[in-house]
Image (cartoon, rainbow, N blue to C red; front, side, top):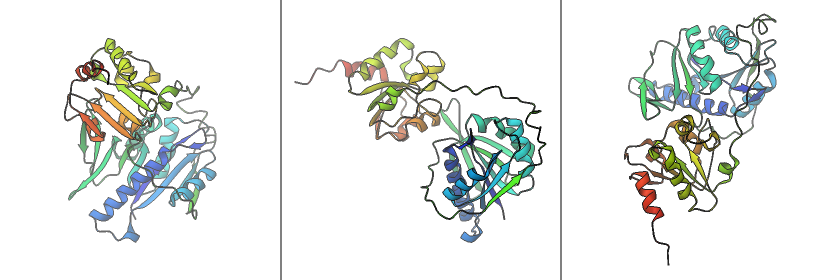
Length: 339
């Protein structure tokens, strides 16, 4: 039976929530394969979750209980801190003995680090940053953002080779977790010398924590977020004045503005910034990259102002205003006060 493998994301001995999204992605692939190949339900591709750790048993049992899937705890003696070469060597040893059609990892700093090397080790295709799984009469293909997240590229891998996929966080909604009977859990101790971690080609020194998230963004009921459409740094003052028109508001920004030094990191909304869920999110000149959308997808009402009628952000908005954002805000600020 063909297998779909999920590599659980483990950090500091804990299961990261993106693992549940990977399982949801794997189930979607299994369902599509069943539908397109006319496979009876009992013969669905087998989903197995791999948990690399020096002590994988408690993590593996928790994942099996939460998902109802078979789990392999990959015990790596002496493995305390993640490094890509240990992951590639150990996972490569295990997966070469299996017959996966798909191997899934998260498109996080960790997944982006080891996935291409693991694909090379396994002679597998590698597609990164998946934000949509599609299919047609010829089989599965995948969507990934390109051109600074303004377009999506459709990629169809060679069907005769396994494919290594990294899935974008926040895209695949995890199934509701209901505790039940723990499925099969196997603990495999990898044949990786006890001193291998100490002699690894890459030696971790320390983990740097990113700056604290902006609690003003977290607590705001209304967020006015700026994107490249504001054109220049000086126009952020206009965004601030616009935000001041609403109570319990805060100013957010897309990543390009932070990268250009126009505004501080504490204002960045997205999976690499702050995850927010306000009552209202007003996107001002933001095109709508998948990373940004993932950071505000739980907003109750999204209002977007963009002069490009085909901007991706409009597909995720409740109210779409096709206008130059600067002209719109100027007009809004000069409206007469209500009588």
